[in-house]
Length: 164
Image (cartoon, rainbow, N blue to C red; front, top):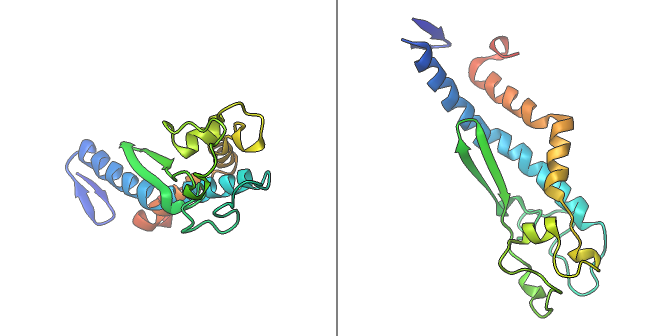
């Protein structure tokens, strides 16, 4: 018999399943928020690398609700497998920009893919590769905010004295 907080488990396997379920919930409810914040920050930094001259940017500061690449409301979170989430920026291309050909914008790819890998002849700042996703990933690796979010979520469930 294994006892954890107010629950009792008949086997280690039962305990592992319970813990994995809690970890998955924390990933989706807490850790994903931290990752979305970092994606938003990296996208805004990327957007501010130049000022557009042919279109009006949806947002380059407070992106929430703008529908742009930095808008956390356009980012999807998916539990890929136990302990693994994927957060995908799914903003659509700015429809106000449809008057312009996009100089090679690949409509078969997402806005994020076009931004990350670049498109067309890449001679303008807007169609050169700008990997804001990798920037966010590196920032999380160095700052470890996602690990702190997981730790905080575990402490909330199991108490400070049980999580290190």
